[in-house]
Image 1 (cartoon, rainbow, N blue to C red):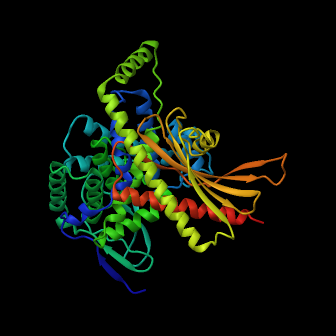
Image 2: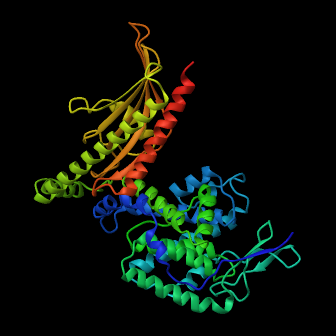
Image 3: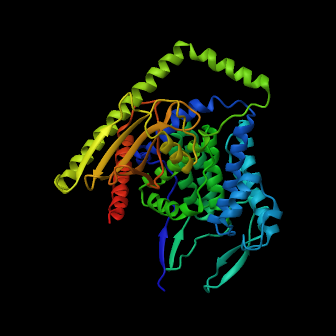
Length: 487
């Protein structure tokens, strides 16, 4: 097999191409999250429980991505919810001894706590901190697997808390060798990395862009003999958490997308990496918006009630309600325009004499239609739907006969325990009026996740394109289901 060498490392710098990347998947919810974040007081039990679940998820998934172990999905969810308890593990759940697994998980969790402590104590990110962090995550790991010059797999004792002393250029199965920063340059490159990072923070560059750039630059240096991926994700998490965001939890099923995005960034195309990190933050924001705070005492309940009643009458509250209504109306008009465009596109393909297609929107006196269906949809996708808040729906009807039709219902309804986030969701309604005394109505799920948007700001052009793409997918999937349903 012929060897092919690819030099991954280039002297660290910040290319302005990073400033042109697309952060819209994060931006669409960011404003609402920052408003919601104000509601969580220092030491809030519900929020801290949520963060601990994210820490446990990070600890589990980062080891799976690095192939330190396998862990079944069932025990993964149990560990995330209940904590790392060895008695929960059965022999089918993992491919390594339970005691060794617990050592890995606990050291990962301690490392994440170490990151949170640095932020809480307002410590700067330094080279010495990175070395401490490395020593912590390798506490229960004594060797790594490598391939020697003869092509044989060997165990190599790991160096903990120190930069690499020998080149660590991995070789792929196809013979490709990826060359990272030579050991002699690691120390100076890490210093340069930290200097550029601080400069980006001082310039208030978008936090997801800073985190993505830092992650990619760190992986290009590859400063340690082993543990580089784990450290990169921890340091990226640190940057995000400093900006009141969430750990970088790359899930096992996202690994191919993650690796591909890093390789594209190696080639000078960082957009995919920024979009992936934005998507991961978006996922955690959606979960956080569904945290329902549960005060422990009657006094706490009374205090929260008093605060909310006082806010209701303020000018600030009224101005905010006006802003949210304006942006909700703008979103509604935009979706109505898209549906009209889709209807025209369908008419170009499907003659009107073959199938009658009609699109309508909700009116003030029928906005409450489909309440039960929306509740079922929200339950299916594990979020809270506030049925007391204003909502809208659109219906695209496909009349296959005079008595039978399929309606693709697209709804805009409130998402989570906050007033400025809405979900765009969809499902299908089948209506059969063949028998006069036995009208049949059936809801058919589309199995497509809701698209969430903050109403704290106007729609950006990127967001409009994201919504347009989402709705086209909804119609495409809906029509595929309808086509398969028609006998």
